Amino acid sequence: QVQLVESGGGSVQPGGSLRLSCAVSGTIFIIRAMGWYRQTPGKQRDLVTTITTSGTTNYADSVKGRFTISRDNAKNTVYLQMNNLKPEDTAVYYCAAQGVSYTYWGQGTQVTVSS
Image 1: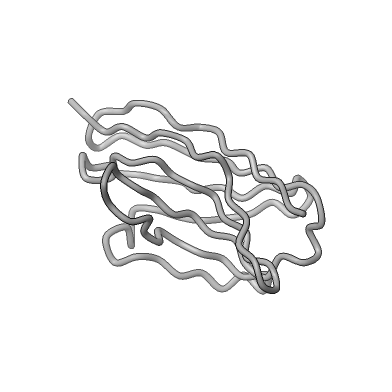
Image 2: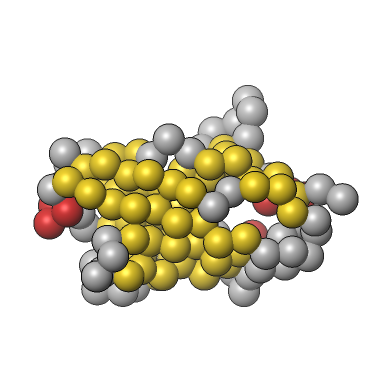
């Protein structure tokens, strides 16, 4: 089992920044990759970014150049630095851990970008 706890969401004006954190605990050695997804009401959950155990990253086109995923292995924490936020970035952001045959999810944290 893997447990994920997100933090760092909130409200920010367009052009602002936020950093989300995802604390990971449990059977960490089974994790193959970590990622961030986001979801707005009535829509599917979309990939934002992923990072593998070897450090390879992948980003959705809509966030390239603005968002950065990173990890601190000593703290078992994954981060999502979000810069130059836009109103269309407003969503619930979920941390995900990909195991061998199962994806674990956090509870989500709300990010609202509004003037």
